[in-house]
Length: 407
Ligand SMILES: *[C@@H]1O[C@H](CO)[C@@H](O)[C@H](O)[C@H]1NC(C)=O
Ligand SMILES: *[C@@H]1O[C@H](CO)[C@@H](O)[C@H](O)[C@H]1NC(C)=O
Ligand SMILES: *[C@@H]1O[C@H](CO)[C@@H](O)[C@H](O)[C@H]1NC(C)=O
Ligand SMILES: *[C@@H]1O[C@H](CO)[C@@H](O)[C@H](O)[C@H]1NC(C)=O
Ligand SMILES: *[C@@H]1O[C@H](CO)[C@@H](O)[C@H](O)[C@H]1NC(C)=O
Ligand SMILES: *[C@@H]1O[C@H](CO)[C@@H](O)[C@H](O)[C@H]1NC(C)=O
Ligand SMILES: [Cu+2]
Image 1 (cartoon, helix red, strand yellow):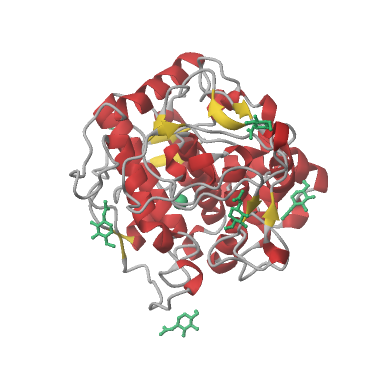
Image 2 (tube, rainbow, N blue to C red):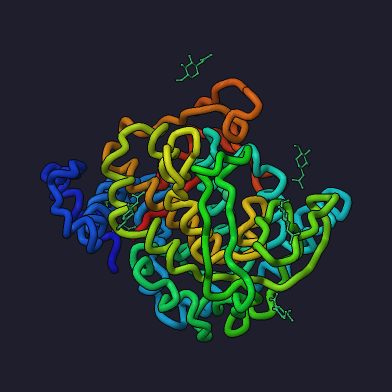
């Protein structure tokens, strides 16, 4: 697409653009078949482009510098392969940590896993959740581009396209232009997995029983078949009738093992439909409720819910992928979190001027009471990246430093 052309076109029609955000403007069919979400996505895309600097301005983020993030299946096979190659390349680059700081982080990719493990209780079900993961995925994208020559944005995973049958997803079909296969099926003598819903342990009424999956073992085909998960486990749930995992004494220690996956049709059907995504965007008007429903935060929900965030992780994760600490150990983490960020950016775009805030404190579910977080507080990604003030994360095209849009 010719961005300069599009930009000037938008400039002309700008006064006529208004972003609809009333649920009653969409039929239930449009909400469930994805067309409402698609329309919201187009509106968000155009209104975001309107915030770009002019082509000749000094703004660091303008039509010639903006990165476009696309859905996985809109990339050509060659683009998908180049993405996979860049991810593998991160495994060949040196860690940002010394072996004293994080003995298990033996390369640049693992440095991302180490930071996530180390900060888990400060970045989930806290005020930092959305903005921390926004900065984290953006830093990953920067490394893919600057260290490994990848051209393009992180592909995102539109959950709704796979909600009906995740086992048919091209992301997981094991072809050489996929993200690798499902795991080997281990379910012959297991009866399922209980997943606790956040910390601390939720009451049984809010625990989600994931039931029988379709994999559970090591990825056996395609990219990442030989991928090593080098860190964790830290918080893996236990498979019933399956040996309990031995957790590490040093949570940043080295413990190489295969990458496991488990495609779970029930989880995808129950938590990842277009209706689930679109309702989240249209029905929750405060950052407090939006982030709570997205994460199935047990402080806010009355029944067992994973939200789209947990639903996405548990629809494919096994081993590290089911472990809230070690989840970036599976590279699909970043496709999932690009979609989490897209849904957040889309929600912000519906009322951009008023959706610049954070809500909550700094420790998971307020198990430890800390002061309220404000947009003047900083996001810590050391040693992967500089500290960043939360208010500078609010605009994906603000140039401070972000410069990307979701198409
Ligand atoms: C922008 O810069 C280009 C050359 O870099 C020039 O051709 C064009 O006229 C400029 N446009 C405006 C609006 O200044
Ligand atoms: C882990 O977090 C602590 C502070 O909580 C910090 O001192 C340490 O450097 C961090 N380690 C890594 C590997 O990020
Ligand atoms: C299933 O049961 C058989 C026989 O009891 C055992 O040999 C095998 O290791 C078990 N498989 C798993 C995945 O637990
Ligand atoms: C695994 O751990 C859980 C909780 O600690 C315990 O209830 C269960 O019996 C254990 N399962 C096995 C097979 O040891
Ligand atoms: C998710 O969507 C399905 C159908 O599309 C619906 O049955 C379920 O109640 C929804 N769940 C939530 C939490 O919105
Ligand atoms: C923290 O935020 C809550 C919720 O908005 C508010 O009620 C409370 O007054 C705030 N506390 C402080 C010290 O600002
Ligand atoms: Cu996370």
